[in-house]
Length: 394
Image (cartoon, rainbow, N blue to C red; front, side, top):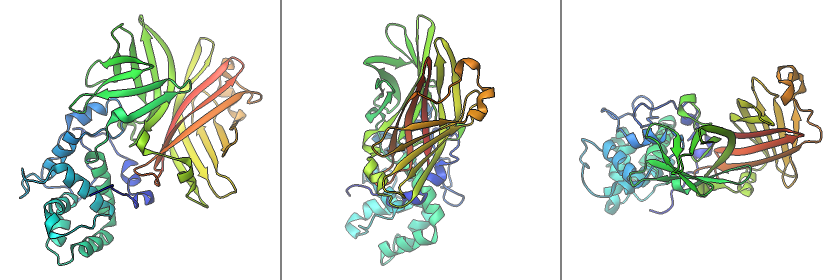
């Protein structure tokens, strides 16, 4: 069946449903509008529900994909029959993407149930059509919203992604990654070479053999109705001997879902805008304030070279600011000094003579389709240091 393309995603195929996501009560995200939901109780995935307590990223193994498809085919003529449910899942995603074309009789064991998974109506309309490919194409054209919503649901539940392949880093390039059990449940964090086992299935705290612990705080959570698919950002905090350390910003994601900047720049002659959240800390010696605000990232490719602009604002206790970086150049930062009065004196900066750094990673379902971005910004002026992570999506 080959690689699954999603060329139609950029126009909002994924982003529409992810915008308001909402927290699933049973580890299952159903993004179908009325008329698309099968007439039964949705498949329950307690493992996904457990993983959502840590990160909103897609974390799905083959067993979960198979169980999801089995639930979608419940009470149908394909229950407990061949082919393998993961093949049906791949085909359903391709159909919803508009890229599946092998509607031949020899392959009907795959595309028949796949059509049914995408939509019962689609199967009843096109399952026995003389020209299945044309019928499916026409149906997709007539039902764009339903198809878009279904693709979102399928990518969330029927796309296998191993969270062990995702890597996160902080500003000092300390690496963080998860491990999972055979069932697909996140069971530990490896931070700087030390493994911290997960305390319980409903939490985000992990503890090492020496008693120290790590709290992983994702900036993108379902509870906040802000969700990323292929990347994450936030802060982690180590506690040792009952003393909580500094919160440290991190960002990263799936390496094979990260998009090279050249492919982002291939979106010639336009400004691509992403919006989301920004969180982190500002420190001055032992004094610290937490940052929690919003972020807007613009990738402007209308000039001779791409320009990336990050606007972070909405902090209750610090300045709004903008970081601008032209391709190949060092970033610059500008603070909204009109907000100085709400900033405690120990955390005030001038924006003159400080050091700023920024890195941004773009992610998407394929190498040509950036749908989200995460990154880090650091600023140091004298003894004051800002350490911030951000996550945004179209």
